[in-house]
Image (cartoon, rainbow, N blue to C red; front, side):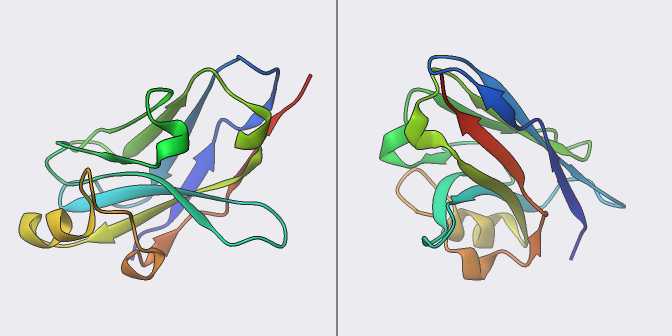
Length: 134
């Protein structure tokens, strides 16, 4: 496991943008898949996006496709979620999560048609709040 710290959340008007960051301590993101989840109080955690070790073919849930972009620095320790054209329904607590493994394994848990399963990710940040409101 690695320690993850999210930042970049805040209050933004509809149509605005935010860039969330996820920093790992004592690790680089080689051989890690990174996923972003979000959750509203009293609701189930929703998978938003994930990216594997080779940075190819990330996954996006339908509601954010074309608006959000996930990326990570494999040689470093930071991943990002760029969120554009934000909508009130994007309001949630956003978590980043990491899964370690071989490229083959990571491709099995994250891909364009592979919705991230939270049970496959064993390192989690504390969350950063995103509020979209006028």
